[in-house]
Length: 439
Image (cartoon, rainbow, N blue to C red; front, side, top):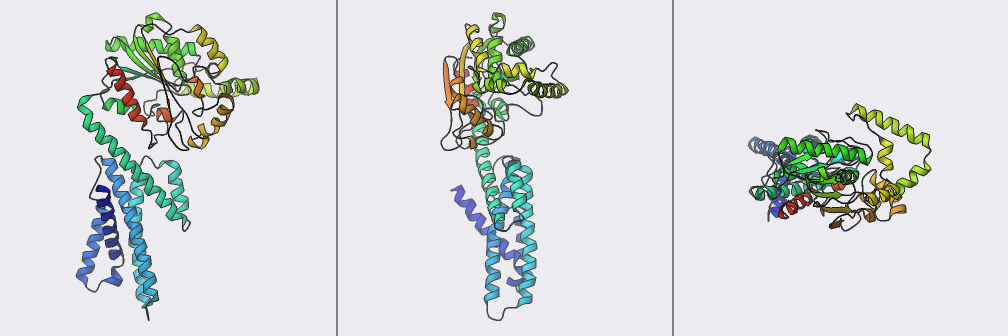
């Protein structure tokens, strides 16, 4: 019903914009001209009545409404222009003046709308914004690009407003208020930056539903044993500072191996209730073995030196690129698994995902997918499906169609809404399940 009401308003406002944009040819009295121009100003300020709940989404909805109404009004204006040319003895001067006014007023509506969505939308991304700018200079392609922008923003408004309403409805239930706080451990080649969260929008969603969240704060690249020690130190720090009895760990990618290493110490394991590994290569990556054997040592050292130097500037005290890469190989993980037993009293579970096609992932997952597939079979763009499973429970996630779910999607890397897989809700339910289990 709301969808029909919105479409009805788009059409009505589009017709009114058409009338206001062509007032020079349509109006006979000053009073009617003033009325139409008043309507025009009003629509530019408030182009939509049925608005979502948050300030950002309201701005997106108003901008998107202006773009839709612009298309309707422009189509009517073009039809009116053609009709004016075809009538007997047309007044060419009137047609020319009216056309200039119409172009000016329609342009104001368009820029009012496009600026709003470009500034406030989060789902347009750089790619669609660039497409919009480039195609804006090409006839016909303009309409295709505008349609893509409208569709993307419309889906964002619907998706995000639904999430907001769902969280508001269950806010008092605090379904993620677990007995023990959540420790989120990042994977390799990243850090827990304050303004660039490795986990995207996931921590905020968990906190909105009652979770208390901490981060590993360990280096971006190091051997599993060294990272495990850093995680151990972090666990003790959280225990000492908060007084909590234990923590629930959610670890992504290599972070899962790091945490398993930390838990080999009984003095650390006693402070851990659960370990959930996400996209972790428990059995390593065969393609990593291949690359290390094929790429010359001097080239490996050049890349490693450049990375280590760069990450020292970002705060890593002693980054070790090569050790991190070597610990992701299948050969290392085979030996690691033989000597790394699960800690008693800790609940282990694992989660994996897979891309259905390479094109389903964004760079670099769409590139590395083929390499991983050749050596490891079905994969998430980096880790093979056979490598994910560890612990008492295991889930493999994907969606129908060409897309699938990538290694990056599992941490909301691109902040992209996937219609068939709401990553934030997945983690909310994951933590809610930990709460139900008494953790």
